[in-house]
Length: 184
Image (cartoon, rainbow, N blue to C red; front, top):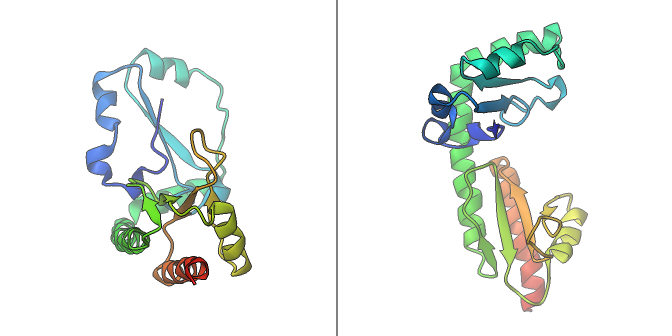
């Protein structure tokens, strides 16, 4: 099973595993609408499976996750709206670049490359950690994800999502203000 929940945030025509399904009868690719379309409440997802014994077995299982009529209508409308999808891709690319480049320009941060809608950052300074940054930003109404609970990471790591242009500029301004408190 390959989870492509975040695939719409990538160059998905070149990164999707769907082409593997055609030649492999034991691969399932799953996707959902909650991330890209911001619809977690409707809990709508789907799977791509080759036509073979696996599909037959799954088809014979009782339907574990029925969708209601509203989710069905929303799903049909979402996937037909190609203009919205293209606009979202274009805007996401712009905002991703703004966030990535803005964070890369902060000398005490290491920003890891990403093919998703969030960036992992490592604080290189010994004067503060992600908990300190989190506390500072929270007082400003900005929340980052502390990543010390992620396997192999520590309290020097945090993650940020790609937001609107205005929110990204505010985040960058406040991170720089926080860091400047330690430089002075």
